[in-house]
Length: 533
Image (cartoon, rainbow, N blue to C red; front, side, top):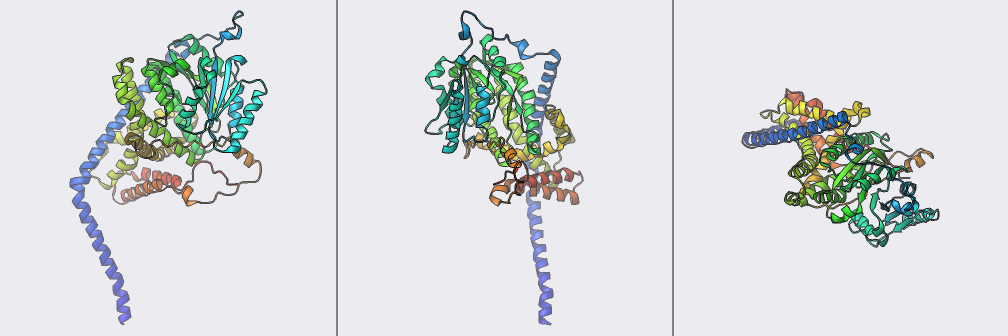
């Protein structure tokens, strides 16, 4: 009887304790909710709505400009003088400018042959072009392979230089800067830059160099990227949608209205005189390409985007590689903005409108507001209003404006419109990392200058696919478990459950779907899986 009494009373005791804890938590929540949580959340909602309006106005403005450009047919060839290079009987090949082609690389086992082969295949008078391979590889085997490849092309009569250095100071910027110090570079007029996975067509120089030759105010000709592996997996399709908008809209608008846009770091041709006047390559941030572009623009130089020229390249197809790339691409611009905003304001060589464009549109809205608002509003603030119903988000801010922004972003890739919902979910998850990186860049915190070269797979997977079927990847917690994504996913799932039981606005549909997206990426089930053997 005593034992029976104890076993029946024990659960009641636990039940009472649990009720007490729940009651105490409820009391604490009620005490801090009205005076603290509600006012803070209302302020957050207002700030997010303001940022959404800023993004909305920016997207609509660029959409209007693009439509006008298409209707008026304002192609670069019409805005600037363009004539094909002509032979000169008296001068011979000396009538053609001397061109340097730089290929920076770092342990690029899978793609070094493709990039060197494409550069050596460029059509241009053979005595007026120098191919410069800047090899920062730390793997001796890869280093030997790259050097042998350069020797192979040299034996065919190609003027190719294999350059190495004894350190990796400054990473890519340091390698490019070191390459420009070589004595033979002094005879060059222009420099074309291609990352290790980029493969230009043979007529690349014939289509780009004439713009620089005939327009002395131009410093840079940037061409478009063409992705060879965009259909590899769903993640590469999502990247294609984002980058196509960047090239189709952002670069085109910057080129045609202010003659300024951010250099993409590759697939572009610089006037060496402009590069030197701007101060050359600097390694103070992880976006040395953008840094150079801003400095050259402040010297009064103009840029042109040539969207008709496309250079094949590879998108990162593993989640790990993409995360590192996005950290660099988000942290670097924010840090550069911190370092250069006052220099831009004090500059006297460019117009007020160009300053406004660079500071407000190029940096503040696109590189800072876009990342922060996407994550904070849609993944933190909006779900929080479910738990705090006293704070409401107007329908125009929660539904209409985001929908229009999304549709305007998707116009660059019409073939992927049916993947729009997946793109929204994917971009919201990635906004977590972009927001974190942006804050790191603004505060100049740890990892601000972290540079991890984006892994390229080249034909590696094709080679493995032709052999035995790859084994199923093993689950490794250190490599596949991402706690930040899982934490945000759990938060969204909780808010979704709360909305189901107590809410009235049906946000749970979005919250559950977005939570699933965070969980999928949190467990690493996205992108291409590379077999270990």
